[in-house]
Image 1 (cartoon, rainbow, N blue to C red):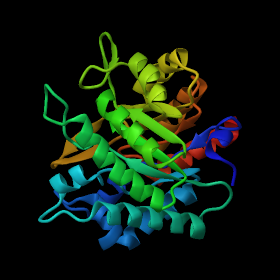
Image 2: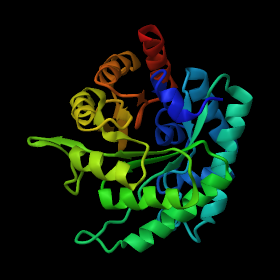
Image 3: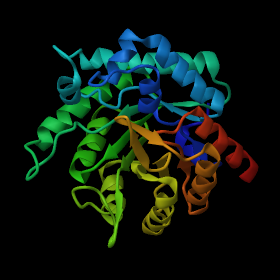
Image 4: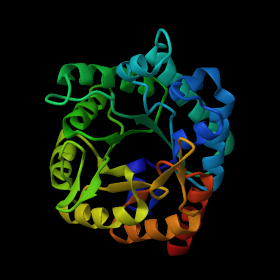
Length: 299
């Protein structure tokens, strides 16, 4: 298998889609920590990974988005599970899926999401607490033999930098870091006011090999962000938009965009200079399959 970063220079790589959406469709209950399914419902996780591999994803992500000790303590019912066991189980499941159902070059990304807490003045999270939480998770994913690390849906550059540095403490493997932004009248910003320019400067300086954005926005909204970030940096870029803007129906988020519409718009992100693309909330294997077909035809 070729190294991940080397392959970025040869073709546009395709990441998988929305893990959370798939688990909710499979029966994940409200208030239930999805990461724990790595231990309690491995059959479901294997099915999700297989579906995205069959759809043509080059990179699949571990089901560990909320598996820092901090997030698990907040999202678990009763005593939180051991974070190391949850992360290693997630990596082992995804690695098994690649071995059994993948072909050609496929990479496993160890998924790391935010702690769910905020730095001052919005909260009391400290850099030391964030760093240690991410270090514990990254070490477990490294033990689970992931190929790359994917730090995603970060809304505060300070937390994103802490995560990148924590991964660099335990691994020399490629690190990808995505912020989540909204389009405002004055441009793109995270909820705490961080900008694409700040991301382009600080994330690579902290040790990220690839940067980008995911979640929050639909594919059409992310096209201009891709162009803006391409003009700001030569660092490889990854973008993973949602399947449109969600509508709340009977208390549940429903995404109306079709796979074909999604794929057509994401190809504009590719044309803007992204080295890799994928999907976030609401993007099922059908979305990834449609995008795979577009990428193959474009290549």
